[in-house]
Length: 111
Image (cartoon, rainbow, N blue to C red; front, side, top):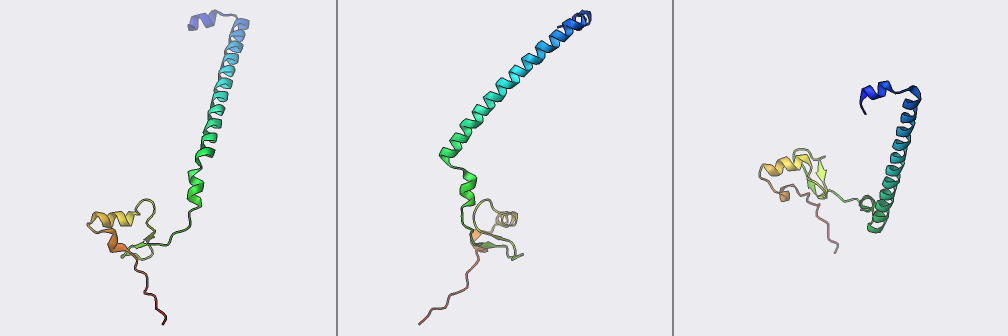
């Protein structure tokens, strides 16, 4: 609609146009909301069938560290997930994971 047409309209006609547009927008928003709620319901149903990955991850037992930074012994990595930054840098320099293995102390054998 052109602006000249809007300017020439009476106040009552403009108000009717406003109410019609508001009603149309309200209907469209309600339809979109219903569509999104249905989609969310289907996604939740899929999640419950396939299991929730985050809860599976949370149930994993803690793992003891297997690798240690020789320059800073407080930095360790258990071997799960992405390599830590300190390890990535050392691997790029040509070293291997075996260079950073934490050697367990020898156990005493009972006779």
